[in-house]
Length: 481
Image (cartoon, rainbow, N blue to C red; front, side, top):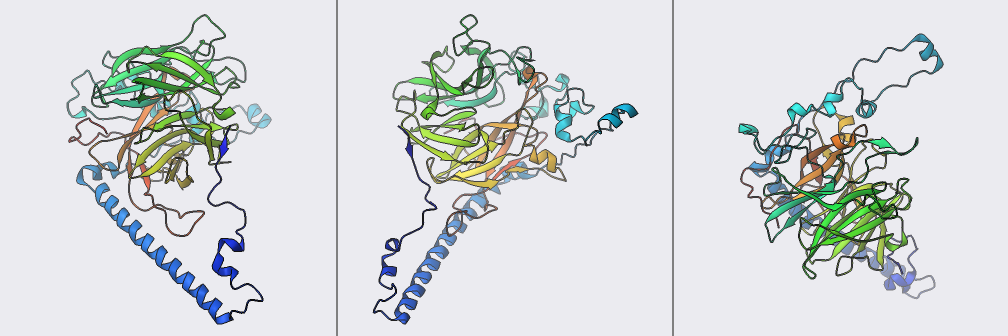
């Protein structure tokens, strides 16, 4: 059973009984017109006072957040860099080819997707420029270089795509789980999407979010049984792990599909340790709905939620998991209906829930959107594009820095500071897809008002700042709460 939760801004007209004081002034009433007018004036005055008080409280809240984001240690993260990528000269075509089919103007996104582009190195820098934590990097230690190859402590490229981070309080260690794509890229059929056979879920551990040790494949593919969800010919995407203190189990949820993306399900696996091995339990369509890009979010009260794209990616569904985190409950809410969003990444700050999503354009990058709500099961409002870049870099911004979000990590000790994790997909060679990690800061007034009510939004603006080179504040101690 699915419980449909109606929006607070239902289109159903309000009856006169919704406002009892109006019923007393209906046509034919003995009450005089002046009384009705004064009652209406009084109501408007009360509404205005409430609006003023709310606005004052929100301004105070934004002023507090503003003071935090202007902290000296965060100020340099908000100094955005320009990224003016120059288009290469057009390739020469024979007069016959030009006459047969006039060529449309090439865009930067076309160049990004073209493995033979003359500016390929801009999007995918040479492996010689890899970030290698095992070397003496001098002044480059602990600096992130979005888009470069990122090596683990064994000197191999990290394979944790579409992933997420778990901070394990017992070991005081970060664990990064993601798709292990270290295999050849191919197309299962002529119209099929680029893919790599399922290898499994990779896991890496770190104390500082920069130096990552390979813990191996913690959930492996099934090489023989073609009927198994994890058979190499199927799809395993966007694995996320949370810890259940009640059962003392680490629980992994992931997108499970077949080659043609018709299964559209979620899979669940568990382990007694963060480094596995995880035992695969089952797959299902949550709430009897198709499910593709997904994530899970664990709230402060230990309630866990699943968020997934559904109805052919036209909307998102949100619902709480059961107490063991092994299944959904009967409660589900449809949000962002008709907006065609995927790749949800949810986080919480100062009592407000935020979410970053992408559009649905396959491997091609597109514009991110930030959303906010006062509760996970509440009304989610869209706040616009959170990406910030200097200069006239509209394409770079509207393509989310040529990447797609996957997770948001809070940075303990710096209020309002997070790390936005994204993948720069390389459909020509998926194992060479890169990571784009950037500072995300929550603070300041939003750019647009509420769509459905009086007053001002209670939440703050979300900004993801572009940097070619950046690091977390040196005073950060590596812990998270």
